[in-house]
Image (cartoon, rainbow, N blue to C red; front, side, top):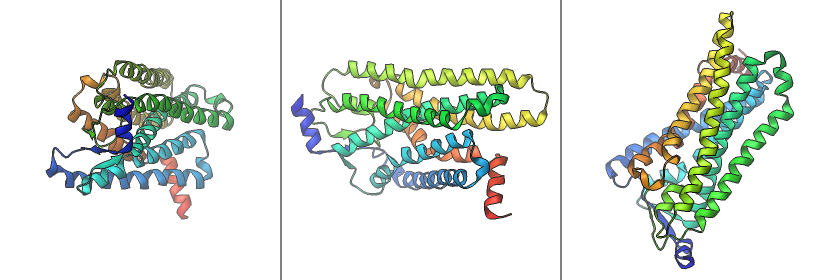
Length: 308
């Protein structure tokens, strides 16, 4: 076992990516580069705008800035390597680089699951407890929630990364994916990985299903509060902010559930690649657009910033 692990560690791995479809690689390179640049520009825009405009120094935009920074880090952990592999003939990555990519991708993905729950709780407090909102979501509590999201994500990733690191790859070098993630690496092992698969399934249930249940519970309470509202302006504002968050939740959780809530041996690898491509490339680029296109607060902040 140690010999197999050390052979992989001292060498490199080959990320096959989309090499089975060479005619698609140039098209994918252009599309992914466009989405990546959109992600960088859109999320940096939200972070800078939220910092510069005092009207956006609220819990909602504090968490949204965290989400934007998270998406920047998440895409950067895998997309540059994917672009290099799509552009040139070399599709290699060092074993150390693969494990580093695995750790940060899993840590940031888990953090986003928890952060989306925190954001739904913020919307619940704003709609259902409006008179106590500033007391409940005070700056200290908001910072604690953000720190808890990041710590839980990186702690969960440390668990899985360490378990995956000790799984012997037995000299196999070809990773049939465009980045290193736990289910794909477990397929390379020549030993029984059922314990790893069960651990992955259990923690994925904790960090995917439980957050999803909490989010839906929050929005169930919000829906009941909305039905009692008389003001059409209030209704529009609630639907504007909550609708954006629900759309982001759907775009993130549905693909994640398709990948992580089933045993690695039970999913189609080609199918999994395109699902992973969606939540690593497309979703982070759409988040800024979803939150800003119909957001009056953001449009007002832009006008104030440019002096209109």
